Length: 186
Image (cartoon, rainbow, N blue to C red; front, side, top):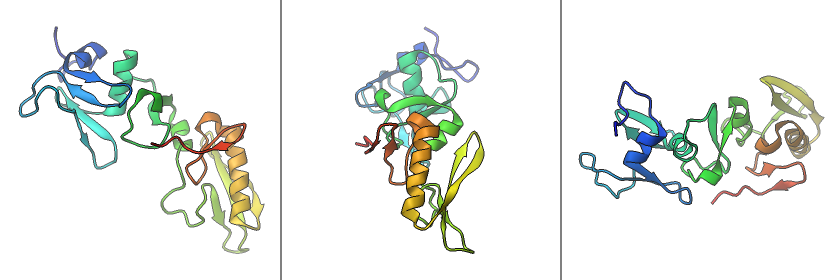
């Protein structure tokens, strides 16, 4: 069997010839010896961006995209989202296809956020709190509120309606149409 190389795209078949994947743990194990790495050892490394990466045939791949290829036989059309936000939890039950926008919805607040709540900021002029949400690349104003908590509630309600299964609030909880539930992070 011919393996993928720099001139050929990686296929599920060539991937399965060199690695085994456990959908229950999300780990890849080498089936062949590769230089100093021996068959039977865990493949890949924790990269500086937080994801698990595996080098195959001279190219670096994110392990979550390889898990998708291994399981479904083809690379996903868009991005692969980690449902529980754990970038190295590559169990197939924790992965789903997502557009760029959907992947952005499934995030907590940004590191530079000063309110402590996703989609909430303070009007400097009035001291009131505003809630905003992104819909199809456009920021949508949700209103002005006396407290950050009230603005956060407005954001969570809009996220449940607009972002559906990808909605997440500032605390990292997934928002559903029925209720707000805790993330299933392990």
